[in-house]
Image 1 (cartoon, rainbow, N blue to C red):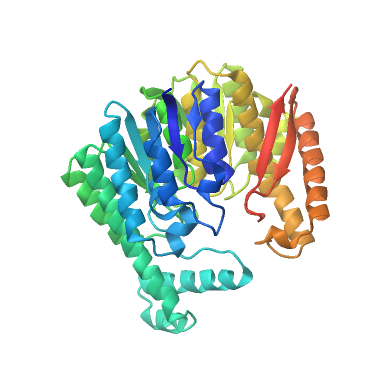
Image 2 (cartoon, one colour):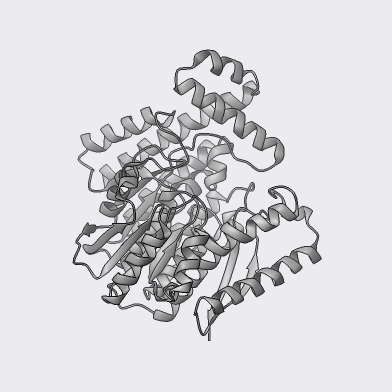
Length: 460
């Protein structure tokens, strides 16, 4: 039987594999992904060949495919290993063959543009990451004397592999654009992973943009900051493909023109690109409001309170600080009994990561949706993006005196105690926030590190 969506996620983390499925469930769509053992885990890449074989056996109306997983074995693998040329060719061939077998199905793909530096997986790799960051920033700001000094701190083979991988990933993104031109891919996102303005990605972006324009693909290929949010956006685009009206408001309009941390262009540029890719248009009379919190919690609360009083559906995008919600904002929302009235909340990782999740919520507001599932999504994001990332993660890091890159070093009993402690804390937070009939039932570290967690909630 044909599925609504077959998804090959960026990797096995919840933001890439679980949340897209939850979005589909809220929209009443059936979504199938490969088994976890095929997707790999953290430093162990996914099995590209098995995934390609699996994909070609699946019949679906829509395919949402991560090229990073299909070609390299996931996002981390895309930065850290030279792939087997056979696997690369098989991945691209699988897409073309899939389209031939399913000519009436839509194939939506996303492929990241390489991040600035390397992957952090230990204290030693953190030093390597910092050295590469500093060296590249010095080099691309034309401080060549400082760059030469910093380059000596980095092993030559590290720089050599970095350059090779940048070149390989760039060339494969060009091939992906060409597959759109040939009709094998119907829609393509090229999200730019962590970077800074005028870095090594700039020339790559310029070449890709010229290619997109020359082939007349500006309505089918989009390039902007982001990465992990792409699957969430694309399944929401499948769920609600029509033109959608949205009112975008914020507490501090001047912030729209600022470049957010880890990004390389004004936030407003990313906002317009993400919206256009998902077929949103700005309409101040819309019942759906994407409210962006930049700097002034009390102003946000006042605006949101007014909007809710007029019956608007409000999705809160909290960008006051990267990778975690704002304590003052959430406290004020709870005091005013507004938190439980939201239709969506997002505050995780980079600004564009969080934006993508918020827009996925927005896409669901004018649909006939499963209210129970959307409520669970809201609760899950509040508990993860705010309670865990902003508060509890800091508690853990202080308790262990460092950021934990390897939770396997923590004994089983301690991890079980952490789970019980957080679940209790989360359910207390939900009660105090006015949520009824929904609770957190499980919590774990899917990649055995504190950077992300897995939260399970259920409605009674």
